[in-house]
Length: 320
Image 1 (cartoon, rainbow, N blue to C red):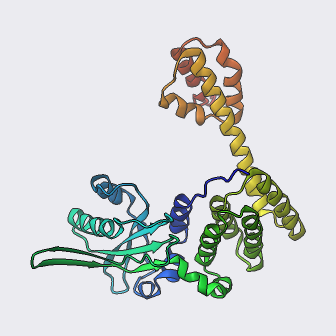
Image 2: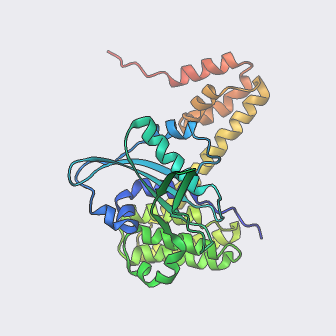
C-alpha cells in the first residue's frame, strides 16, 4: 500500500500565523503575559527574507519573525523557529545563533529566539550555543519546547481547547502512525469529531481540519473510506463543514487539471509559453478557460494566444 509523504512544514507555518496568540499562550505562557495583545501583531516576512537570503545555514525550516508590543509599551521582535524534521541536526544551535545575531546586525533590534522541536529523539535538546576563542567566550541560550514531552501529558491535551493542543496531538500521532496508516485513519476521524464535540466555531473547525488533513496523509483507499465516514457523521449533525472543504478542494483540483492540460496542449501546438502567459491563463474563470480549450487548436503562434487573452480579459465598456 502506497504511503503518501507526511507534510509538516507548511501546515505549521499556516497555523502559526492564524493562531499566533494561542501559540504563545500554549507554549510560552511567561512571554504571553508580557505582551500587550490590544496592539497589532506584525509578521516581518520581508525582514526575515533579507536575513535568510544572506545567512548560509543550509536548508530552510519553519520560521517567523514577529513584531509585538510589551505591556510597558516597548516594541519587541520574536524570532520563532520550528524544527519539524524528525532527526538530529548537528547545526541547529549554530543556526539559531546565526539568525539571532544577523537580525540584530541588520536591523539593530534585539531578538527573542524561541524554538519548537518536533523530532523523534527524546534526548536531543539543543538550547544553547557557545563560541570560544582563547579567553573570549560568547554563550547564546534560548528556550525550547520538545513536543515529545507532551506524550506524558496526553490527558491535558485532550482537555485543553487551545488550538495548539490539537496541533500537538496531530504531530505526535502522525509520528506514531508512520507505519500504521489504518490507525492514522481512525485517529484522524476521532480528531475531526473532537472539533465538533468541543464546540469549536465553524472557521476553527475548517482551519484545524485542514491542518489535520494536510499532515496526516493517507493512501487513497483509506482516505476514501474516511471521507465517507466524515460525510455520514456530518450529515447526522447537520453541519457539513469538513464535507464542504472536500467538495471545494475537489473542484479546485479539477480546475487545476484543466489549466495544466490546456497549457500542455498549447506548449505542443505553439511552443513553450512563458510564465506571464501561464499566469494569465490560470487567472481565467472556468467559462473562459473552457473557451480557450476549444480555441487553442486554431492558434498558431504565441502572438495569437496573447491577442486571444487580451480580447477575453478586456473590461466591458459601459454604454451611455
